[in-house]
Length: 240
Ligand code: SAM
Image (cartoon, rainbow, N blue to C red; front, side, top):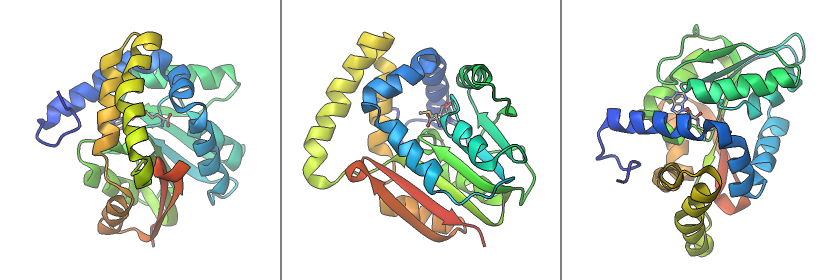
C-alpha cells in the first residue's frame, strides 16, 4: 500500500505513521547513520549552526524524535534558554529523553501533535521541524500552528527531504526504493517501515511547493537552501 498517497484515508495515514515510529524508535539513530551515510549529521549541523537564535531564547523542536536538533538548540541558547523537545510518538521521545539525560541534559519533553500545539501564541523565538513535516496529515494546519506559536520576528526552520537535482533522480530512486528497504530489513528487521519512509519522501512537496505553502500560512522572507543536490532542503520563514 502506498501510504504516502493522498487517496489513502487520513486516519489510516496517522496510524501508519504511529506504527512506523513505534517500530523504528529503538534503531532509529543507527539507521539514520547507516541510511544517510552519516549525512543527516551534516544536514542537522548546518541547520543548527546557520540559525539565528538568541542566547537565552525559546525554541520549539517539533517532531523532534530522538532529539538531535534539540541538543544543538540547547547548546545555542545556553542555560538561560528554553528548548522543548516534542513529538507525537512516545517511543521516539523516550529514546530521545534518555539519550539527552545520559549526556547530562535535561530538557522539557512533551508528547504533542504538531497540528494542535499546546503552547500559547507568540511564545517562541525559533521553531524547528526536521524530517517530520512529510509525516503530518494536514501540513497546512501544522504550518499554521508553527506560525501561531512564534513571536513576531521569530523564525521557522523546516529541514526535509526534497526534490533531487534531475540527472541524479534515477540513482536516487534506486537507492531509496531498492537499497533502503533491504537495509531496513537487514539491520532493523523492518522492511515495511523503510518502504513507507521511501514512499513518504517521494510524496513530499518539492522546494517551490513547500515555499508556497509557508507563504500561504503567513510566513515572510521564505527561502530555502538545497543540501546534497536537493536530496534535502532547509526552508526558512519569518513571522512579521
Ligand atoms: N526530528 C528527528 C530527526 O530529524 O531525526 C526525528 C524525525 S523522524 C523521521 C519523524 C518524526 O515525526 C517521528 O518521530 C514522528 O513521530 C514525528 N511525527 C509524525 N507526525 C507528527 C505529528 N503530527 N506531530 C508531531 N510529530 C509527528
